[in-house]
Length: 251
Image (cartoon, rainbow, N blue to C red):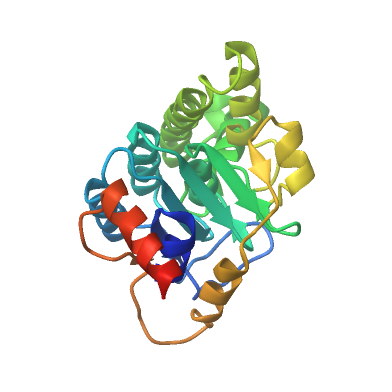
């Protein structure tokens, strides 16, 4: 990570979840974006000067909406450029975070995913379809309650996506893209490729630095716990980074 910082003059942060297990139509997770991740990542951003660019290496199947929205909001508020690197995948809440960045750098084969909320084992959009397809008298109380929660969750996530996109594209397109990503158009593990992300109007590039792949090699699938957010825990200022880069070149 220090090598990435020296070469690019940025604060590098890694949000990496390597102990994942995937199912066909969803993500039963061993590791995911949680409140501990958002707390650590917000702290990293707080320790970064306003005019210091940030590079976020992102590899995650998603996680808690609250945690992902906190991270996305903090990225959006950072005044300097924020670049998200997706070497393999950033699904669900990971995609929500990527949408907040000024630029997304993806491997040519990397994917993003839909951000439609899930209520336990059930997609929010599918719960609403239950009420639409059956007379209300035939629907049990628990399903009605879940459907009410699902409607609120869908509305909230869509509003978040619109806020993240509205200064990158016109209001009508932001609304359309937000609906596509959050309304259950696809299954929750649908892979959004580089080409499709560009078609949606996302600022995607594919010139992934080799150092990002090297960093991923340090995170093998393993049983032991390790921090999923890492950064150098010191305040960063642009002049200090320029001095460090100059010394590195002299050496």
